[in-house]
Length: 119
Length: 429
Image 1 (cartoon, chains in turn cyan, red):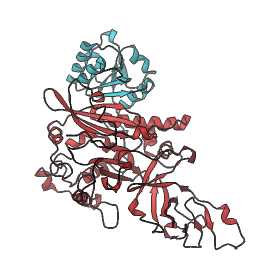
Image 2 (cartoon, chains in turn green, cyan):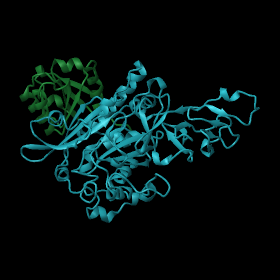
Image 3 (cartoon, helix red, strand yellow):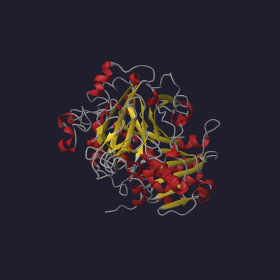
Image 4 (cartoon, helix red, strand yellow):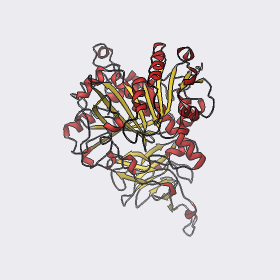
């Protein structure tokens, strides 16, 4: 018996949107502008924050979404593109506290494959 | 969070001509323990790697060879050959092959015939580094520099190496090595009793916090897999495992004990060699440490006599001891760290169906390692891109176990500890 893929909710700014080059089955994107929150997470299995390491974090939104996700039994992950070159990144500092797992990759073109692997 | 059937097949299939098989052949491969070919003209040994049946021998001049396993004449196993006068001679009709696979004698054919010059069998370079013979099975023009992973470069007296047969695909074993969170469970009651782990302060943190948070960061050769556990109000206890492409792990150290490491090498798609290494960069291994390792402690095991197969196996339920399990002497009831791992990994079947699994956040290292392997295999197949981790400079890394302030990322707080600097101590507690 095969198992349905896990449902993933991805969120992040414009960089995140550009990293995800195509729609993926079982992956939906929450845009910050839409104000989507707990309702949009619905029956996701995992919430993934996707960002470039140099972005400025929206601490309040990240904390709120992560808390709502956890309350619903949704795993929280962060997928960051880039390397911390000059001291700690504020974005990474925020996501380290918000997420249950953090993945840091070097190339934006790999975001699509890693998100697909999380399903 | 499962693989597609196509991804799974790409990851597990290692025969020649498969994407992963071609990728793995670009690396030096731990092929034999040096003790298996102890000297010139010693008996040859059968070797099966990446689905290829081969024979290893050491010729009269001490050169190591890894050649096709069967005589091209009538298909007889060269294992039964005579290792003599700089070549391995088939016992059926006397055809003889040198370390480069050339047929150098064909006594069954007319003396004036040059037919032997037309006959050649596959031969792969094999070199000795310390206690291990390493083979290279890829294209000659792509042969990389010899490996410089720390344990391969140390004096023989600083290193202990064993290998054991595991009846699973290599990926299953590798994923076990990458999965740091199982230590808090599978090995929970073994850490305090095992002579190569006992007494480390880190054991206290490992047992106190079974829910580590993971941070996985790409490195030049593979991944840094950081697992952080709560230590006190101000600090995290970090254990940082190194994953080096394509199949190496370096375990974070336990106190001042020897460092542990593994390599998981495919024999074929349903079996692999689990190589287990302990080493110390600054001192020789003591006689007592060698004694306990050779009697199955630490990450090593007890063999069936004359083999590299563990005594504890599926046929005897890995000698599970329910009383020890109940008494909290062993979490799973199986004795020994190596066999605790092997029993659980073999229980998945030789090839776990990853299209049906449910991974969690503690599996982030596994997810990322699979992606690195898939990406490298695709890049090689599509564009001929050189695989990551072949540069010896990228292999000069260490694992670490340390306390860091909560606001310090391990990439910064442990940056020095994760670099291999010869003749320096490793960072551990």
